[in-house]
Image (cartoon, rainbow, N blue to C red; front, side, top):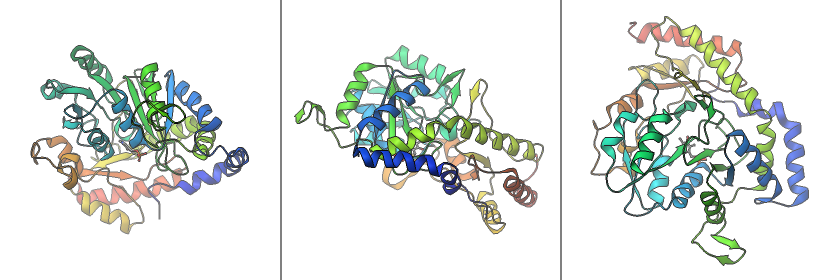
Length: 371
Ligand SMILES: *Cc1c(COP(=O)(O)O)cnc(C)c1O
């Protein structure tokens, strides 16, 4: 069986470094925030080209606190895409604001900037583009619209550590950027963790307070805050992994090129890296109108696949709203019906990839009408 992701392979490659890092936290007893988290914040800010980074307990908390730091709350509207992991929309709901969706560009799976203006109302306060699958959203037109209309831009970079847009890393392309270190993400903790990056010292200060009970000084609560602190062990683990992230990202990109080449001319729709972007392939998704049968066949051939995501947020039972119905975001809905994620992780080798490719091509011949 070729797994969809293989966390054990990566752990095996850094086991000794991890043991030393975790032992250091145990010896220091700095179990929450502390010096390892502070050092990670410095390193991660520099990595993303941002002045400040604030470690939190998940990518969802990162989004939640970024919105709160920007002053977003009940009565406000925040524009995002329905073709994303549900956390993007959930974080907007947590603040009391309402998500307003715009459709994706079917080529990139990312927010279509041409659709934003029509979604802006007098209540709109922010835009959250998602760098889905590790490909940066088209940030220049998004930021241009936001500046002109007085809106804040928060990057959902949960899947895009190290991705680049026109020579700049994600993390400093808008007003704030939010990262997830969920174990399966490109940079994964050994538990839950997340990060907000920004160049704005006011946002940074507010997020530092909000993650730790809104206190400026212990037991002096100036804002209604949360317990969203990052754990010391996660900080130490992530610092070890920061030493390898560039090599791992290049390994993902090499694996993507290998797939691209193997599928060229087969009629299979492969992901396309946008002009001037560095795609970091958190997910390598192909498309087929016969996705269900395709996935079944691949499973039978020993290739594990994933679906990111089978239902767009506006059609999710828990997040449905009288404002939206099926047909409102046709590109997102079609992508949800057709995408299939192939095995992708830095340790995936060409022997494994050859097996995936053979299984995919064989299945495609039976199922996909060639163009
Ligand atoms: C994973 C993810 C999140 C949430 O991050 P958690 O660390 O799981 O809370 C948010 N947005 C996107 C696009 C994600 O993929």
